[in-house]
Length: 146
Image 1 (cartoon, rainbow, N blue to C red):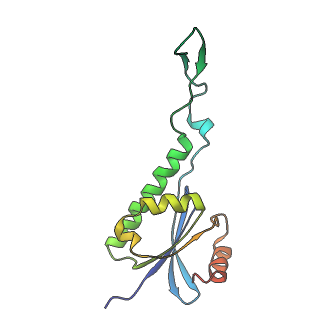
Image 2 (cartoon, rainbow, N blue to C red; image 1 turned 120 degrees about the horizontal axis):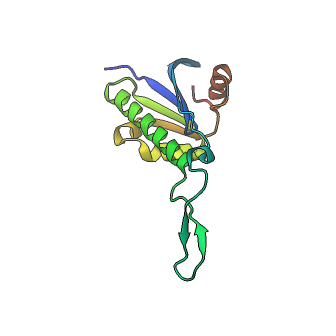
Image 3 (cartoon, rainbow, N blue to C red; image 1 turned 180 degrees about the horizontal axis):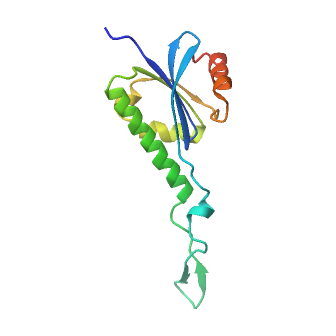
């Protein structure tokens, strides 16, 4: 029987770190992933397009259909979910603990494959990606994740 390997994913929607639980209270850093997503004002055009009113001679600015910043975060979350699916399929881990900002946690849940969803052991809706590695490990011990 293969030994159980648990990974901890810490993410906020544009940054992620993965740790492997190496024993009670010990973790090994597996990798960091990130995407420097600029604010919407830097992604979108300088000035919105203009259109005519349906009735009358007036014109007004058009709102973009999608927020480019939010879309870039969804793309990052989808890529992260695909990475985890490949690792799960190859047997790199058998259990997953997800610690993510609330919005990112919801996006991750919907992006995870059924295979990855079956490995999720615990979820914490908490934004902790800004913590140093030492502080993050201390936090994970405090909340009894590791």
